[in-house]
Length: 492
Ligand code: SAH
Ligand code: SF4
Ligand code: F3S
Image 1 (cartoon, rainbow, N blue to C red):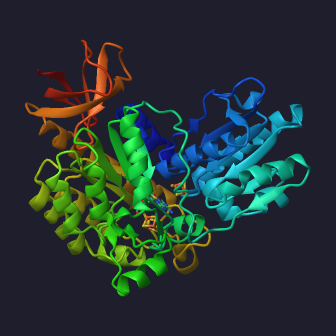
Image 2: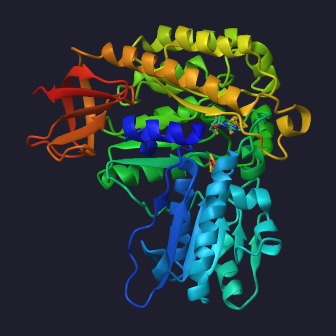
Image 3: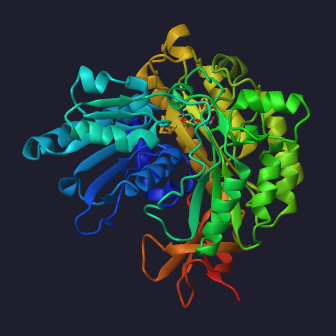
C-alpha cells in the first residue's frame, strides 16, 4: 500500500513536518479535555490539511459559546464531530471506517449525536445521512455558524444538513480556540476556497469560491498571538498569492472595486504588515501557486529577516502535456523561471518544497521521467508525494481516463520518493558547518535530553537541551544531517 508507505516515511523521518504544513498527511487531531463540570461535551477528530485543523478551532470556539466544553474521549462525549478530508479516496475510506466504529459506540449510547463536517461532508452532502444512515448531522465548511442550531435540531429528533457554500464567509470575527498547540507556533487562515480548478482536485467543489479575509482581523489575530507568547505564525490559504482585499471578501466585488481604482491590499502587502508586528514574530505562509507567485512577494521576503525563507511551490508534474491536462496553467519553463527568481532574489539557502502526483491520466514513462528531471534541476528540500487518485465530479474524472495501472503508479511514486530522499539529504548536507537561527518549539520527539525547532528554511534542527526553553531563539551550529533532520549544538 503505497499511501501507507508515504505516511510511514513521513512519520519516521519528518516527525514535525506534519504539524507545520497545511498538507493532508494522514495525521488525525483530537480535542483535549477542557469541559467544566455540568457542561455538555464535544469531541472533534480532524483529518486532512491544516485548513481543516484550523476550522476545527473555529468550530470549538462557536460551540463553546453555546455551552459545550471539549473532551479527549469520544466515549464521554454528547456530540462527536469528524472534520473530514476528501482529497484522495483513501482519506474517505478512513472516515467511513471511523464512522462504523462510532456507530457501534452509539448503539451503546443512543443519546450520542454524530456529525460529519468538512470536505467529505460537502462532497457527499446528504448521502451519508439519508442513504447510508451513518450520521445525524452533515455540515459543510462554510456553515459552521449554523452548528448550534443544527445540533439542537438533532436533539429534537430531526436529522440536520447544511452544506451551503458562501462567497463571503471567512469567520473573520471568530477567535479560534487553539487546540493541540505548542504555544509557540500557530496558523492563521487568510482566505478560503479556491478558484483554480486543477483537473484532479476536489477542493474547489468542497471549499467553494475563493475569498480573502479582512487584513485588520488577520493582524489583530497575529498581534494577540504574539502577546500570548507565540513566536511564529503561518498564513494559510490554498493559493495565498491571490490574496486580495478591497473592502469585501467576495472576489468578484473585490475585482470590480479594483477596476474602479479602489486601493487594494495584495499578498505581498499583507505579508509586510504581519512582518512589521514585531521582529521576533516569524512569518511563514502556505501554499504558493507557481502561476501567481510574484517577484513582489519575493522582494518582501528578502526585506524582512522575520519572514522565513521557505516556499512551498507545488509543481505536480514536470511535463508540459501533463501540466496542461492538469489545468495548472503554467509550463515547465515558467515554473523553472519562478525557481530561478527565488534563487536570484532569496539566494541558495531558501528552502523550496513541492507536491508531486505520479501516474496522472495518460502519463507515459517519458513524461514521468520529466518529473524526475525537473526534481533534479530544482533540488527540492522536501516534497509531499502521491499517486493519482480519481475524485468523482472533478474535470479529470469527467474528461480523462484513469488509465495508468496501479502498479505503475506505485512504481513511479517510489522512484519519485527515492529521488526526493537523495535530494533532501544533499540539500541538508549543505547546512553542515553553518550557524542557523532556530525558534525552539519543544522537546525532541526522540529524547527528553534534546530540544528541537526549525530554521528559517523550515528544516527541523535538533540539539542538546541544556538550559534552553521553548519559545526562545537560539543559534545552532549544525554538525550532522539526515534526509529529514539537522543535528547541532547551540553557540552563544
Ligand atoms: N492548493 C494546494 C494543494 C492542496 S491539495 C496547491 O495548489 O498546491 C494538496 C495536494 O494534494 C496537491 O498539491 C496534490 O499534489 C495532491 N492532490 C490533490 N488532488 C489529488 C488527487 N486527486 N490525487 C492525488 N493527489 C492529489
Ligand atoms: Fe486544488 Fe489546484 Fe486549488 Fe490547489 S490550486 S486547491 S490543487 S484546485
Ligand atoms: Fe484540506 Fe482535504 Fe479539504 S486537503 S481542503 S481537508 S479535501
